[in-house]
Image (cartoon, rainbow, N blue to C red; front, side, top):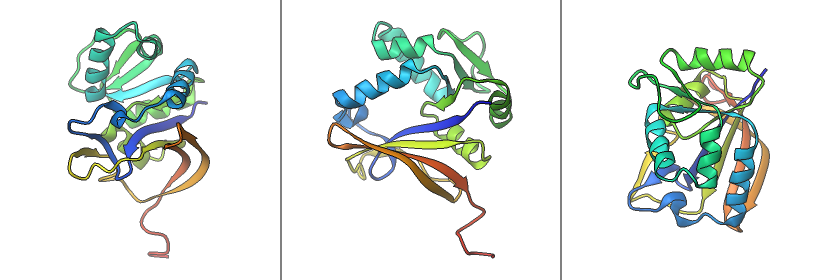
Length: 192
């Protein structure tokens, strides 16, 4: 049986990206990159939606020799989309055009390789709502992008409690927080 981890990088105010800011908000450092590289070397299957696939496959085509991109290209990837058509150009990528939640449930039952998401906010939201996420991990970058932030991560999410199971600081400023999520029917104590 496999496990599923949702992975996000976020600004302190909960955005996945911000207009005119560089990648990683310009705050990536050697400890964080070493951790990313180490994570890419662990065997897992990467899950993503069509938008993330389009962006990442373009990056992979532009800089195929980058060690991080090369590791991502080599690993198995599953893209959930009803708009993309097979065959996909990025190596080791499978297209699933059916129900993502049912596909992930089946993958968790039949695959031994761990599953991890890359970006894909709506895919992650639907997987969390369905209760198939085993771990929820965020790396918080110490910026507030209130004026330029886009792609608010948690809008539309159900109520969820998070039990902290791991934490770490990278480069003296980035905070990794890893949780076990529990989806709630509503705020605790309401309707009891």
